[in-house]
Length: 413
Image (cartoon, rainbow, N blue to C red; front, side, top):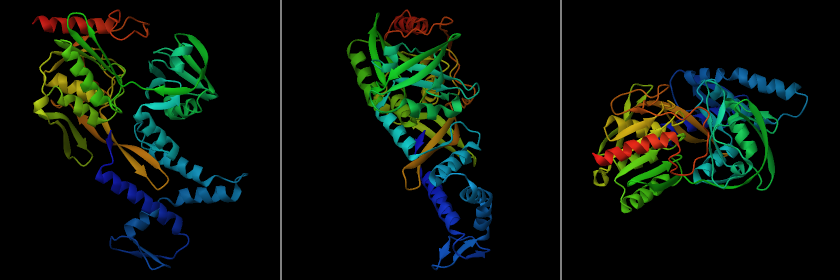
């Protein structure tokens, strides 16, 4: 994701202007001009261009629907809820799962998540829009979900009375949030069994990064998401491992859904020389480059990066660059394949927002990631049905063991 670019702010301002015009066009006489110009009003008349008028006319059916509801609906309609629904529907029409509208409440909750502390049950969920399934990819340490026995790999099927699918996952998350100490009923599918849990909400503290030393001077860092303070925390923990004598490093990006591209850049700066991290291609054909910038922080420690089918977005930017530039050996399974970048923008004056896909990105060698993913140099799969919540650095974890063996071999070279 990329936050509040100039072109995005301009778009948000345009939407606000259109909203004002739509609500006002029934009240003021309108003059149409042939030339493109900003709307002008003398207090009684609004003058707009033909192009702007035709654009407003395309919203006439939407306004007609609103008026019919206003006249005939059997209860007093909630006008703001209707507008929120219209905004969601407008973006839903793009058929892009990564472009959507945030109500003010949802937008505030999104930033709360990024801070790493919230009131909920303590699970991370990966939505698969091709199957509609919502799979629990992580259960946080010391969380209510872990306490009642929820596991990584469980498929979230129901929250209270809501049947959960990928398209309404945010609604399910909103329900799981709430007052500390209050229970919420959650149903998951585990294998062929449906399991019901009653989970008491609590304050959940998200740890973005964990690390430890493995035998044979192999350092291990697990990065769960590119959010919050993950970049400075990662660097601190890397320095600690180096101080303990680490001679090779395993970076675990399994189940990491991505996050902020800026954080991927900061982590890449620790290992790569100045240069291209990823290229972004926009609809108008222009190309922008994410780059590494700090040659002074180059570190030549051998690296193994561990990925799986839930490693996405910023995880793929980082692992793809490390692979292309010959800086790391990638181990695991084919990654998720989210090779598009979003802007996150404020909308209107109520605290609402939106996320919109603006570009597709490619690795430094020009490899496509979207709907393809990153192909590991070494394939290492988990045993079928293994959803064990392994302790940090537990080499009974088959994929970690494969990455560890390679990292150990790199020291010997």
